[in-house]
Image (cartoon, rainbow, N blue to C red; front, side, top):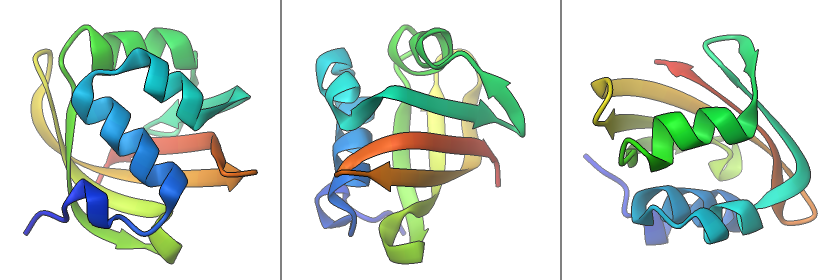
Amino acid sequence: MTIATSKLSDPAVRAFVTAVNSGDRGAFAAALTPDATMSDDGSERDLADWTEREIFSSNGHMDVQTEANDGRALVANFTNETWGEMRTAWRFTVNGGKISRFDTGQA
């Protein structure tokens, strides 16, 4: 069962998922701290390069299945035009109402 984005507990994570699902690069950037970092399957990635390739230019979309850790840990079915659909885990670090780090990978 999918959790509606509007029902996600953490406002920063909600803004992140909303931006991903609407393909809104400006809103996505606004959801992150200027020095935000990320990893994919345990490997550090260049955030700008990774998000352009995996989210924006390939129409990435998150259907959140579960949330934990006060809304800062998600399991989602992530779909994009490159890889199709994958069950993914997302962990977020929030500072000052913005995401300073996220870690994603197969769930």
